[in-house]
Amino acid sequence: MNNFIKKSTLFVLYFLVLTYLVAIVIERLGIYKDHVHGSEVYHSIEKSKQVSQAKKLLLGDSVGNQLFPNKKCNDTINSLACNQAISLIGHYILLNNYLEAGNLVSTVYLIYVPKSFLNNLDQLYTYHYFLKPFYNKEYISLISANAQNQINKIPYHDLCQIPYSLTTNWAPVFNPKDEKNYTFLSPISVEYLKKIKELGEKYNFKLIMLPPLVSDQEKPTIDKIDKKEIEKNKLTDVFKNYFTEMIFINDSNFYSDGTHLLNAEKHVTYYKNRFMK
Image 1 (spheres, rainbow, N blue to C red):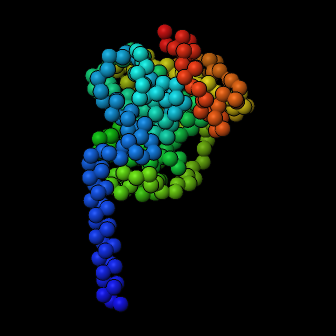
Image 2: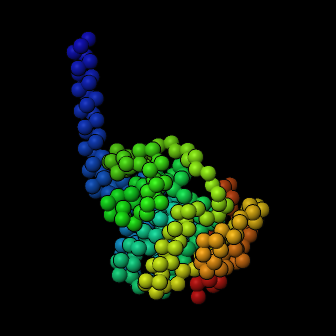
């Protein structure tokens, strides 16, 4: 019996060592980036480091990525849109990468559905979509004290770069308990929108917030948003036409989640003609 236990223990140890070594190889080669959930985030990171002739850059959540996919050529517009789970810190980092790569930008567009601005690094998806791609040595200097405080609340945040975690879809269960005293702009969103504005002043580009196409069933919820939060946080110029230009369309144009568009490509011409001339 003791011999059986010893052999079983050795087998388990060998198996764990082998799988860990495999995970290290996968991590070093970056193979996992195309196969885990959120592969579009890793694609945007890699693309943000490339030199482009496009003078117009587009950032955005998953609806933005539907309209202007980051894996397609969008003429004179270079899209780094991916999803909202990376928060506005993630979008700020993508933009910073792009500028540091030497790209000259005249206009930065940001397509974001209203609820995306609520992200305060307090979502179930934060661990996998933000911590794994961005919480590392390369970007740690761009993470503010406020953001770090939010990160500290996430279980096992300090283990996110371990190969076992990094190369898989695993993430801990996270149920944030922070009280929200805002209806639209989270503290993280406010902080990093201002940082994006600072980049605009430094690199001389214009920031334009593009309103999404929204289901008419969402209108009552959006009407309840306290617009005073915009003025209070001195972001009136950023959201100048965001709500007034917002278009509400029939719910039949959306998937069952009421957010993502069916046949998003048919709306692209509208955006280009209306906002991007």
